Amino acid sequence: MTLPRIGITLGDPGGIGPEIVLKALAPENSLPKAQYIIFGSGFVLEAEMKRQERKLVIPSFEESRFPSLPGLFLWDIPLPDEGITIGIPSKPNGQASFLCFEQTVEQAKKGVIQALVTAPISKMSWEMAGIEWLGHTDYLSHLYPQAIMSFWSDKLKVALYTHHLSLKESIQRIKMDALHDFFTRLDRAAKKIQPDGFQLLVAGLNPHAGEGGLLGSEENSEIIPAIDQARKKGVKISGPFPPDTVFLQALDHPDRWVIALYHDQGLIPFKLESFEEGVNLTLSLPFIRTSPDHGTAFDIAGQNRANPQSLIKAIELASSLSPLF
Image 1 (spheres, rainbow, N blue to C red):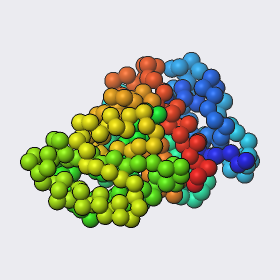
Image 2 (image 1 turned 120 degrees about the vertical axis):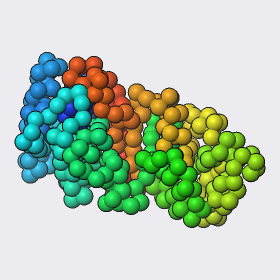
Image 3 (image 1 turned 60 degrees about the vertical axis):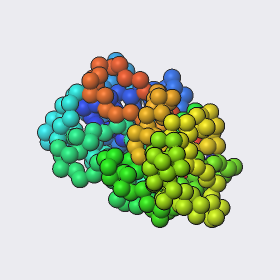
Image 4 (image 1 turned 30 degrees about the vertical axis):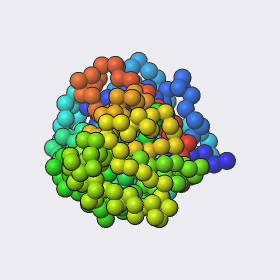
């Protein structure tokens, strides 16, 4: 059996990314056998090892020398000329985190790695560095317009119809044709990773899913027709359900996905149930991409206080799904 080759970025070097990467990859966590390649600065890793009083030997990655053996390797990416800053967003932090992510994506596109796991970046650092994308998924959507942001845990699975948009703009995108396209794309993506079957549950937009039109018209005019079209094509989809109860229908049912229509509709219940073990999973890519479901936590960066559990789950999920790609 061929071992998966998984790229792992350090994220924003001023946040908790380097800390949780080293903690997650520590031998005591007994991660699945794979070739794990850290994409980032060796200088940042050395500094983090000193903070943690941890000694790990991480050889440079040379593809031709390690065709089949498991292990931990470094794809060294030099830092920008300006130094990084711990605990706050900065231009150099943004440059460093984007360069690492961009290189990892390039290697995934080439097939050098089958999966990539991204430590948290700062959208503010990216903006300060002049990077036009709002985050990992936004950049991936630029390369792969079919990409879908989803969140995965043992307790709950959520797919977001819209994500990093204002609430006003998200509502403006509730259109039958676009919803139908999203439903069918999600169905195709989910079939690849859950071939034994699943159900899609659509959350309503308005309170009580519109209460038959009394509390909003979008369910009747846009959402229900899109669901009906998808169902005619064989998609196992139902709804719209009142958004304050639909997540209870999916909780502890691994074969059920909730389709949330905007970012916080899906992320508030997901993080309430699965914050420490939740995984951000990008669907509809030609490779696996996962990430922890939290941010850079600048307030505790450099203090050796961060919990790596969400990143560990992201690595385990990437390893389990990578044979499917």
